[in-house]
Image (cartoon, rainbow over all chains, first blue to last red; front, side, top):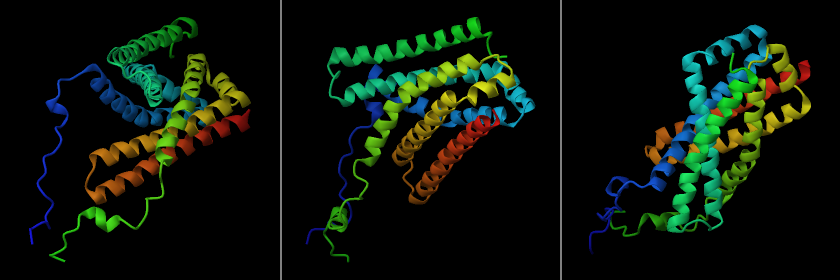
Length: 136
Length: 128
């Protein structure tokens, strides 16, 4: 009998690094990274809500952290990750219907989600600063 | 069974499907669709609360409409992120023991964050 007990050494499909990086590939990776970032970012949401429910002092505590440079940096990144993951998700939902897979369309959708996420982030922060007085 | 020539597939045949079917895929899409309007509402709520004092924040977050939107947002987002992180773990962690521990930790984290956030919203609502 032929020896077949060990799994045959079959060729593996080439991994990511063999391909020339493309925008859609990069955005696919970024979608996952922003998703993971948002995952841990929910700790901030829970902290904010618990602080609000606890006491004015606790609320002032998270307020002073969030208005520090580091806090604003995290919030800015969080805003962008949220917008980018949302628009990237809409792009995936469009793809789920079988539309938007043409070479031109898929590039356009990907560029649109990137430009859209950056624009929305900047708009949200401008609105935040101008009309609401900014995070204090 | 040194003479066993069967592939691993043979050993799982006959046990049927894993019985989870398309549930994961569907829940991911369902919560993704729900997350779009809920996220927009969440961002608007947060921007509207910037710079306000604690009493005003408690008043607004605890009002019925805002509280319900926040609760829906928390429910949908924590479900979406739990099954999303599950896929990431399954993709990159191949050691069976470590994978099981991480999958459990993932579920604990998502439920703990979701419950803590929802509890805070309810506290704010019933304080008002």
